[in-house]
Image (cartoon, rainbow, N blue to C red):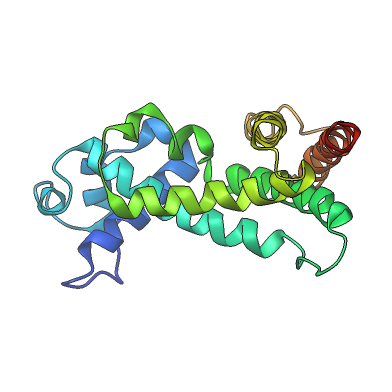
Length: 208
């Protein structure tokens, strides 16, 4: 279906929007430059003025997704207080986990795509900056939980992302239809697990 809103000068943005739609509908394997051209209503050759190959197109789609993901994660985190930040850090980690589940369930794009090997060779400063910002949005609460211990923060963050991505993937696969028919319930479960992980990491950090 051609995009009626497309006009000259917006082709790159229109193609990326089409790519995000394709992934949300059918997963990352469905991403296709040719199909994006069809959705946008341009010739099959037109996208190659902006994207020399599928990898470049994937990198652009991943960058757009990461920017949106970053905004949603940061919006979900409660304001950071001036005083004792232990409770904030734990709740902030839980909030990032819930945001992860909601975003991946809606877009089918998570850390596996944004930081994946398929886009790893695409050197693009914009993509790298956006990916770093997204990483920091998750890492900041983890560092606060562990009193700045980077090793512990990365470990608890790894466990959080594994739990959140697992819940999101199983929800998308339809395996939670009966138990968690709504995405908010699956997100709440991931947040609860992350809260437990954060509490344990906090206890570990303060005990040493």
